[in-house]
Amino acid sequence: MANSSIEWTEMTWNPTTGCTKISAGCKYCYAEVMSRRLKGMGQEKYKDGFKIKMHPDALNIPYTWKNSKIVFVNSMSDLFHKGITLEFIQKVFHVMNDNPQHVFQVLTKRADRLLELHKKLKWTHNIWMGVSVENELVKSRIDFLRKTNAKVKFLSLEPLIGPLPKLNLDNIDWVIVGGESGAKARPMDVEWVLDIQEQCERADIAFFFKQWGGRNKKANGRILNGKVYDEMPPIDFL
Ligand code: SF4
Image 1: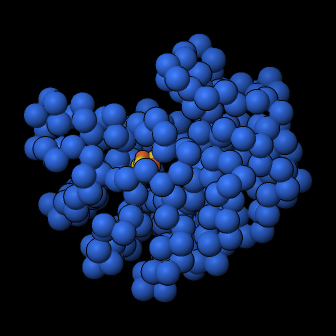
Image 2 (image 1 turned 45 degrees about the horizontal axis):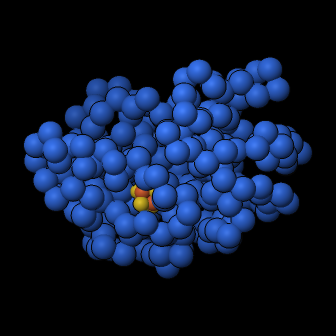
């Protein structure tokens, strides 16, 4: 568990670590860089670097938080990676089902496996399920997500590396947009962002603009149309 600097969450919880690249959005994967760094610092949890690992000892952590939290699950991995067993995914879901006082935000690029397994998982109101979509080539992930039983569904359009016109936003509750950051960040066109913001406004969907990104993401900030967009779905802590 760690407090998070990610704008749309409060903290991270990583019951699995490690991943493999699957599409263009993975090119400068932050989790990969961090995993190698943490391995270098001698952290036991990351002794295998970016190799897929399940961490049963992390399953009890959400029970120890005193107040309600908004939690990004698996910032350092992808829960629906084929290397994570269904049994372990079910254990992670059991923890989330058992802790309705917290909101858990799960994000995957493996939307096909998500759909394959979704009926074997219990979707309580506090589990927000999202897919990452970085360009048109992977737009089908949204259709997979739409068909699941998740109660709250969201899109992370980050790092946005191409335009996403005419999105089908039926049955989608939240859209996050962000540009890539870092020395080699691929550019994000302001017109792509404005188009998505307008699509969300027309469809009356919560829109969150995370960052422009670039070499100096702090300096570039997160102002769009002269304002900060930080809408979220209603939070229903019990
Ligand atoms: S799916 Fe996510 S965690 Fe996995 S390699 Fe791609 S960006 Fe990294």
